Every structure is written in C-alpha cells, then in structure tokens.
Length: 371
Image: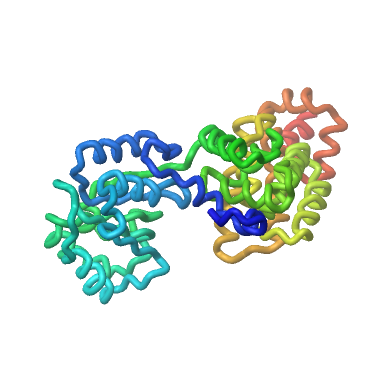
C-alpha cells in the first residue's frame, strides 16, 4: 500500500484489488476445491512433482502455484523460484541459458525441497523451446521442479505432458464469486445493490480476476455498484435489452426486434459482444421452452462461428434475429402435424394470416383440396 500522506490515500494510488486480495495460502484460493486439495496434499508431503495446470484465465492457476511455492520454500522463496511468462523471451536460447543457469544454481533449501521454475502461459512457447526443455527437466529433476500454467493443454507437447502431473481448473461458480466479492465490499466499504453485484458476476463469466477488476472500476468510477453502472463501465450490452430482443423474436415481432438490434449496434457494440451476450442471456431465460432454447443456442452458435471467421456485420446479426423468429413459427407448425388439429387450433383467420406471410404449413394444401 502507499504511504499515509493525504494525497497517497486517493483511489488512484491504491494497490489494485486483484493484487491486494490475492490469496497467500492455498486454503484461501476460491473455487476448484478438488484440484486445490491435491495441491494441499503436495504441500503436506513436501515432494512436489512437475506440474501442468490448465484452464481458462483468471481462475487461480498461477496464484495456486505461488501459494504452493510459498508453503514449500518459506523464506527461500525469492531466490528459489524463477517465473517466466508470455512477456519474457522464452525461445530456445532462453531455455538453454536462463532456465538452465537457474537449474544449475545452488540454493540453500529446507530438506526435501526443490527449486521451482514457473512457466506461465506455457502454451505460447514455441515447439522448439518446449522440445529443448525435455532433457533439462530430466537432468535437473533432483534439484528443480517445473510448473507449467496454460490455457490449452493440447498446445503443450506430449513429452512434457507425460512428465507432469496434470491439474485442470474450471470456471469459478457464481456463488463462489459472489461470496468473495461480498468480502471485498465489506473490507473496502463499497456501496452496492444486490442487482449490481449480480451484474458484476454476470460480466465476469467465472473469471475471478475480471470480477474483482470490474468491481473496483465501477466503485472507483461511479461511486455505487448498480447494474447500469456496471454495464457502463464494462461496456457490454445490457442483458435486459438483449432479453427484450429475444422476447420479441419469440413473439414473432421481427421488426421490433430488428429495431432494438440496430439501436444496440448504433451504440458501438461489436458483433461479438452482442452475440456473446445473446448466448449468455438465452441460457438463463426460464420463459423459453427447453426445445426452443436449444434451437436458439444452436443458431447463436453458428452466428458466433461466422463472426469469428470475420463476417461481423449488422446484416449477419439481422439474419440471426430473423432465423430466431422463424424458428418459433416453424415449431408451432410442427406441433400440429394433423390437418384437423392444425385447423382447429388456429382458426380461419390465423390460417389466412400465415398464407399472407408465406409460411403456410404443408398440411393445409391437403385440407384446402379435400374441403
């Protein structure tokens, strides 16, 4: 923290909360209890194998490794731990020089302990550098342990994977995120509403680092954590607006849904922001029948893929809205395969309306000729 002078107490001089509240012990790590228990067993027995930790960003991989290193090495942590991440040069030359030199260095450690090399974001290392690590890991295994943290374990070459104990981290649950945010709000005297914290959890998507950063940004910039303030600071489409688009699609009001979509587009949100929010909102819409929800998720998934391929236009999003509205009409028609049931269920006026919209059910041709 900064000094006790009046100027130093300004919010701009505070330590980021993500660092201020970073866990120091494995027992304080939030989420992934089964994986953390395995690390605590290593801490208890003291013999640390080579480790490969994989999972999404912001869920505690690097923090868990540092907590384990602190517990195993104690006061020798600073001189017995080498950390390299994606900002460092980690080509073959670094493996042959810096990493090898650290592995050869003599350090006074407690009995049965080893030096630890932490390679964060290891999946961004070149295959050549990973190949160069294979022999280094074997030669210096009596004195040095390697801990790899990555987002995608399939980008780590098989020989390294086979030398490591693999620990997989999943997203942190909303309940665990909310519990931690409440602790921070109490410690920092943050003014908030329950809906505001729910909005922070929604924007984080299981990422603790994102949740804490969004909370601090909203509190520092707005002075109150409410849903509107959160979405302004995080610059994401408001879920209520996106939900309104989906409701209008389900009701068959395509023009209104397209107008709402164009208003979102005019605010400057990217196609990826809108599609991602559509997916996250449709998953939580209890008002949609399960079968309709599955069809919606499939269509949104296809549009997400096309957006990632580069087709990120308003036309692409408009086509998605049209397909979502059409799905409901097609499903209504499929629910009445029998001619009599279809006519009885919709009446003459509904049939005429469908004919005018160009969505006449095939069974109505039979009814018309037989009548």
